[in-house]
Length: 142
Image 1 (cartoon, rainbow, N blue to C red):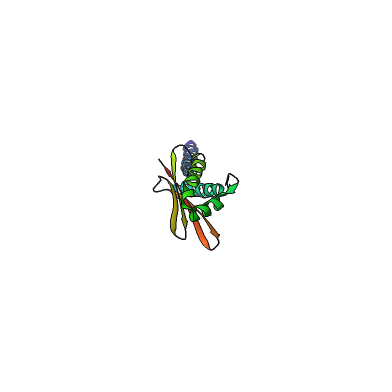
Image 2 (image 1 turned 90 degrees about the vertical axis):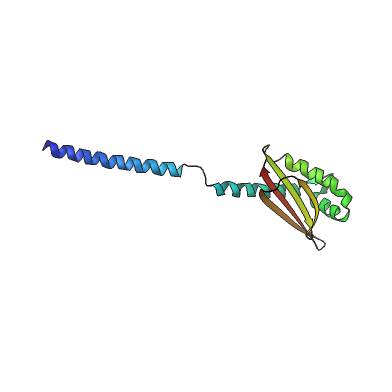
């Protein structure tokens, strides 16, 4: 009779140990860090949001889209615009990140700032007087 009780306890103990092992395996996988695609999507959203915020800035009471249009019409004004945009972007990204901003008007590049080659991208498109202005911001690690 004693042997039968011992074998039932051993069986119950094995079931409990098995459940604990399964629980630990589940916790390990559920608490592991987010998939790598998650950080890529987040970085892309951050790049997009930063570009939208920069495009809503005003410089000397002139909106950035107006300055972009002025840059298209008068290329000498692009230097000032590029410097202002570079300052605004650089002050809003992490110290270990770099950026590249490219602005095109009807597929003709009118402004390029930064040195980033490959990274997460955000884009912003405006149409003014029949001209399509496309701004792209790339954020990458240094």
